[in-house]
Image (cartoon, rainbow, N blue to C red):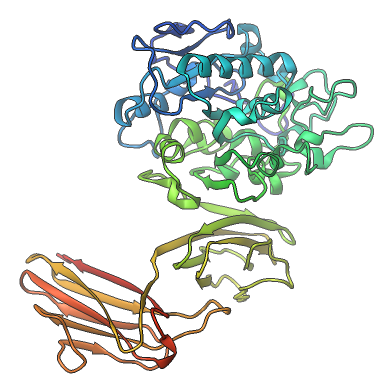
Length: 554
């Protein structure tokens, strides 16, 4: 063994750990049904049913390195496993109404290639298998587009194949699970032209469509890799900008991903490897990493791939479980118009986990918000001085931003905005020192409105067992481009309040938050009135947010 610092005997691929993998979709490598008999995918695959009929947009699963199409039927594991205990395939089929005529997968690696993952790299022969399979599925289902769910090598292989064969028009949504869009920092120690690990290679000088995972931002002449660089035309991270008809999503494990981050060289950048650059069609990029961070050691790929003992998959969520444990998120991305953290859906795992930013570097992410929303962006859990910057429409810099709390030390920092139109908030966390933080992005319910000298009315019904009723009115006016107005809160039990009859009235001047709280003893209807007390309101011009809840504190 040539691995520096640590020795492990468990072989790990970019996909599912062979020692943990158990086929549950049926066992055979080839499991096509009905009249679906594709003239591609001689290494195996699945899909098709007796009815030969599809209603939903068909989903095609593209597996990772050293793996097969059947990896998408691997059950979730570990302390963060969802309670439903279903694989991605089973979750979509058993609980979300998908049929085998809408769920497909193809194995693009041979059995020999599966056994030698360190030798696998991107090349046209593999692209053709994937894109020909897409055509076969479209012909079989009669649909015009498909949704792609890729894991690891399957992500980048498919993106390159779609470009090579001009097939992006055939894709509706693309879900990237832990794909190495920016290459693998864990390849830095191996070098850009090591015959013992061609998966880590640079871009081929003769055929630019042949390349490995060496990071393009770190190549040294004569080696280069435009695919893993920030090249605006060829860079994988920039695919969304060049294919605006497709919606893109990412599920990744940050520093808990042992394939991206089992490295000493480039460790500070490894957590960002799976992220697309921001664009309006990049709908959501969710970090689900949990448990142990990856070891900072230089891995020798000649000894095989980094093991799941080196990161989050040992005791939480890393490269493998970012696929197997996230069926709820995958479904939400496929079947809704969710954006940002809303794509977490009912996922019970850690969708907002600890991130790390190095000194003098940026961690960047976006939040898209609709009009008339209350947006809260916060960093907390700091162990060093890192700073929050937010800017609308463009990435913030140290000197250009719309919000910068700029507290010293480990104080949490918050930016709050009230939107009047659809906005994309570009969030940057800057490392004044190297430090950890937790980023929360919250888009609250619709912003309400009331005219001058008029009422907005609603109710809340508290059950007999509810002990406390809380009602809060906020009009924070943090958005520097918005005017703030004076509205007042009135609450009355059983009947609508007036300006003279009420059980609670909060009439603070200006845009101060206003609250009413009641000790509840019986089933009661609380009538809430918000009164426009400002001549500047005009017609429906006074904006505010209303929160109401009843709580059983026993």
